[in-house]
Length: 383
Image (cartoon, rainbow, N blue to C red; front, side, top):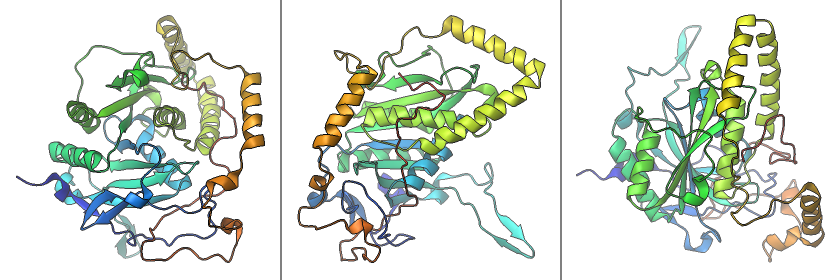
């Protein structure tokens, strides 16, 4: 019987496309030391870099449950704003039917270039606070779902992953003028009960996300999924609202700070465009009106927030402000840095990246405040 992990190509720590950037500001930690390393062609936890908290996995891939191009937006947002390193890639020749989903290639003048091959990659990423998590993203395979799922399960066991969170999206008859709905599922009651805005009993076409969730649950590992509801008339295009909602649910479940600022700004621009087009077409306006009435009639009256525990009281704005001020008064950012380091090397333009034999190759492609400044945009946050 074939070993499922034979589908994986593990990237050595120095097998990155870009060198570490000495100008990167990694927040409260001084360097992006990898939690996972490759030994003998296999991925293992580094004992000297074992996470102080649980190592979790986020999964999202393109497929038939990718309404609003959710997966592509999540990948661009997380890998474009957060420090990351590619750990492994699945063998696409074993998994994809090129003739059913033909890749794109560029022809210019008299030459072909830029072949867009399918991909399915595993990354280690660090959130805004430097906390590591695994991110599996790319294209949903056509073949060997069982081997792919078993490979993921073996990684979950080997890397001691505590929680797997899967994100996908469906096009449903909901209006764009109402909050994004969600169907929560999995075996962690504390992360799904009271969350769903719609939870039918139905037989549906399965995707690899649903199959993987089933397999992880059968292995008695913690797994939850959040299926976001995209207005069906916007499901075929890029709908940033669904990516904002997905990152908020994932961030709350995984206890991570994930970037949404650029997505929120894009959402406001899309809202403006959609409103303008709806106003110019009376038929579309009538459809939206009907969807709004239907939504308001059947909407879930009260949705539980993942950010509030069962016995917790929800603080008001004044209490939140006082807590933040108290934290800022008493928190010393230097206390989180390496006690043997001096100064702030991230601000030293002449600093050289650590190129020692155990250095890992990371990529960080953005600067500035990417992690939220309290702006919730024009959309309601998931509750």
